[in-house]
Image (cartoon, rainbow over all chains, first blue to last red; front, side, top):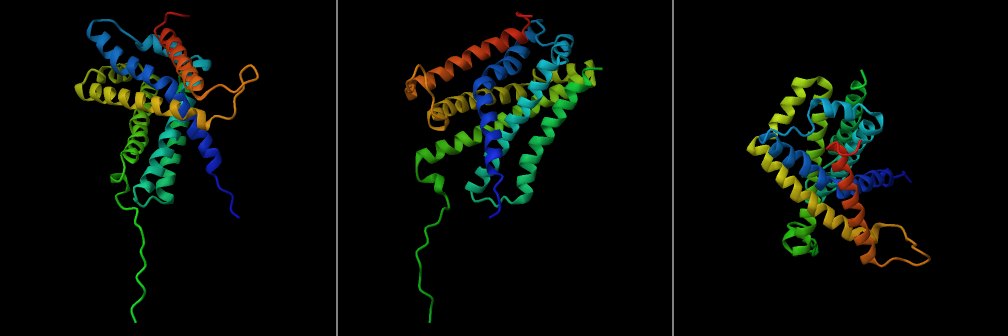
Amino acid sequence: MRRSHEPPLWLLFGAGGLLAALLAPALILLTGVVMPVAAEHGIEVLDYHASRELFARPVVGVPVALALGLVLCHAAHRIYHTLRDLGIPAGRGTWWVCYGGAGVAGLLGVGAVVALWW
Amino acid sequence: MSRARVYRPTMRGWWERHPAYRRYLLREGSSVLLGLYALWLLAGLLALAAGEAAYQGWRDLHGSPWLFGLHLAALLAAAYHAVTWFRLLPLTLPVLRWRGRRPTDRAVVRGAWVVSVALSGGVWLYLLGGVR
């Protein structure tokens, strides 16, 4: 019998879902609402120098990039399976776009953080 | 001879059959906005690596009504995701022990919310530079 690769994917899905449940509301509120509203009042939240200093720290930048990758794995998993639930034919190609895209995005994030070290 | 007619239930339009199915779709759909938000943060990280002008451009875009509205929608989606995720936590977690006893489902869900609020508060303080 061919081994399924579903269990490790489910682990990534679960980790991303838990992270998103714990932190996403607060983060969206901060970067999507507080940051632009504060900017209108002349208060700079997460400006270039502060952000650069923050994310250039390996203990901040790398986990953040990996967390983004996990949340994308979560979204990829749900989108892929919901397409199938809806009866939309989603085959190997879609599978690769979903999970491959999440993986590539995670690596890109790590690359961006590493680029901050120079 | 004609073939026997077999009754085959179809799954077509299954989401129209019960409100719970639509709530399920809404829950799964919340992941689209969460994924978009993660991609947007990734774009911000890349802009940060590209330099000050790129990062400032990324920040300035948040003032546009479209992006502001998308963020509000993503906030709702994230809240719905959190509510549904924590509600299912007692079913998906391995068996927990707390002082030799199993916590009730309610305690597990409440505990998850406490952890969420504490972590969120910590991240806010850290990102806003209150704690260095």
